[in-house]
Structure formats: structure tokens, C-alpha cells
Image 1 (tube, protein in one colour):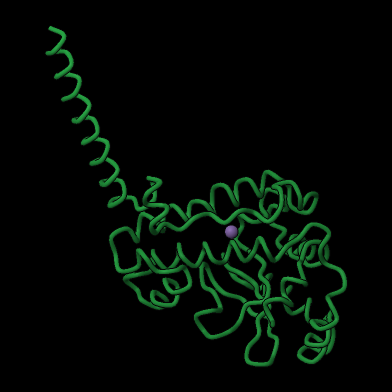
Image 2 (cartoon, protein in one colour):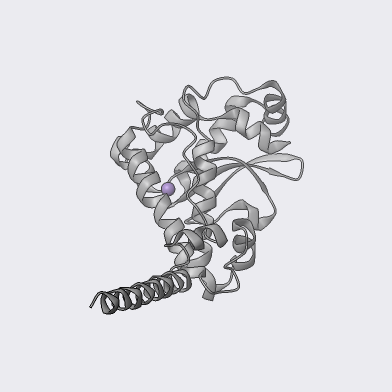
Length: 238
Ligand code: MN3
């Protein structure tokens, strides 16, 4: 009797191991991100926020960041991992996925999710608690050379942000040697047109609606005056 029990449990154990192994493999193939093995192999991860969720208050409250980072940004990461599992994009770094799928109608979903991951990670770094104020001198000189003054530069970024119809992004970019303020729609990112992003402001409604409702201009002004991380912009210009 004892021997039979022992045999049974040994069979049960090996069956269970087989089931666990199969499940892990299936998850790896289908999801590309639900098992630890898959994460270590190829999955994209949600970059940590560079500050606490409440660190940008009162300009942007913790609840906004909680949804924006924890739901929207995370959603793009989860979606991309599902979309690229088992494809030619599975092992590529994020920027390569963006460059290779840009402008390809049949790859729109992959491009949108990949670019939105990149854009959001860049957006979080574009802000800092107690930001705004005077840019570092090296950046100030570049702004003066391209726009005439720091104020004129900020005004151009503001105009790009408020004139973007619908969802998108406002950017300060380096186009060759010249600084420019531009806007992009939906997930579009200046990388794909050869421009170097220095700073961005998310103007999708999810970025500001809890704090400012329809008043996008108030949100953009507050970000530029109180949160924008000019040091980050300067690092990117180097
Ligand atoms: Mn967003």
C-alpha cells in the first residue's frame, strides 16, 4: 500500500511539473511577458517613475500620475509585449522597433504602443519637482540663438502644445544645429524624422483632465513654468 502511494505521488509530481513547464512555455509564446523567464528574455518593462507619484503636486496631482503612469503607460508596455511575442520584433530594443515600424500601415499597432512607451518615459523625465525657472546657461544660449530669447522659446513650445488638434505631444527638438518647437499627433515621435527630442509635453487629455479638465493651456503653462526639466533638455542636446 505504501509503495503504491509513493508511486502515485511520484507520477502526480512529474505530471504537475510537466503542466507547469507547458504553461510557462505557452505563456512565453502567447504573452511574451507573463512569466519571469519571458521578462528576462525579451519583454519590455515599465521604466520606474523618476519621482514619487505625488512629487509634482500641486501642478499635477498623484491621482493623475497614478492613472497616467500606472494604467496608460503600463498598458502600452503590456500591449507591446503581447503584440511582438514570436515576431521579428521580439528581441529588438524599443527604438529599433519604433524606427522599423514607423509609417507602415500594417504595423500601426506595434508602432503606436512602442512609441507611446518611449514618449511617456521621456515625458516623465521632462519634468522634475520644482522645475521650470531659468534654463542652464548652455541651453539658454541655444534658445537665444534659435528663438531670440528663453521666453520666445517657451512661447513656441506653448503654441505647439495648444495648437495640436486632438491627442499628441509638444516637443523642443534639435534639428541639425537649430532648436525648434514642434508638435506630433497621437503616438508620433520626432525620432522617426531625424530630429533629436530634448523635452516633451504630453497633450493627450489623460495627461491633464483630472487637474485642468478642458483647460489645456493652463496645464501647459503650469508645466513650463513649474515642472519642466531644463537640465534634462540640455543633457539631450549634448
Ligand atoms: Mn500620456
